[in-house]
Image 1: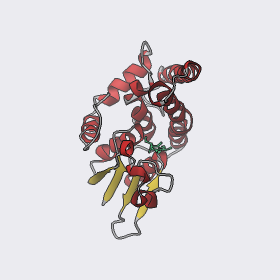
Image 2: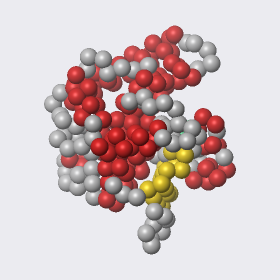
Image 3: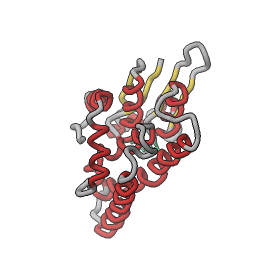
Length: 215
Ligand SMILES: N[C@@H](CCC(=O)N[C@@H](CS)C(=O)NCC(=O)O)C(=O)O
């Protein structure tokens, strides 16, 4: 049995996209980070960093597995299921590369952009401009890459795309727009129209306490 601890956040959405594609049974335990549920002792026992998502796989007879970090969770589920992460090189490394680009480069910058746009207690125009500039450059770079590739790692939809889609679907939170970036728009719309994506977004935004859908 798979249990995902998450909420209506970019990093949770990534995992639900994959779980819905796999059509595997799973439960979501909502962790309302806006009310501090991620700092409760029970949750800190699962993730000492107090961050969602966390996946618990009760093991199907084997030892239970508890994983944090959305990229690690995506790799775990892809390897377990045999889907959405190519087995052969160079496609496997290309997929992991674009997964890490999202986790290490895009996600943290978009997160800072969201903070300075919406969450900071004092307005700081220099910080807003700084992160808007960095975010815009990232979006331009992704758009240019997608000019020659249907998906991030080539012609197939992989966990790298799911990782990027999570934040892209909540881009307005960070004050970001796809704008005239046509390759990014084509990629985004293609994924948004997948039946599994629709199911995933309905599920996430249907969680008790979730905010309005943003995609
Ligand atoms: N690198 C982590 C980031 C996780 C993360 O920042 N989660 C946010 C929500 S998307 C969170 O739990 N924030 C609450 C907090 O940090 O207090 C991942 O990819 O899973």
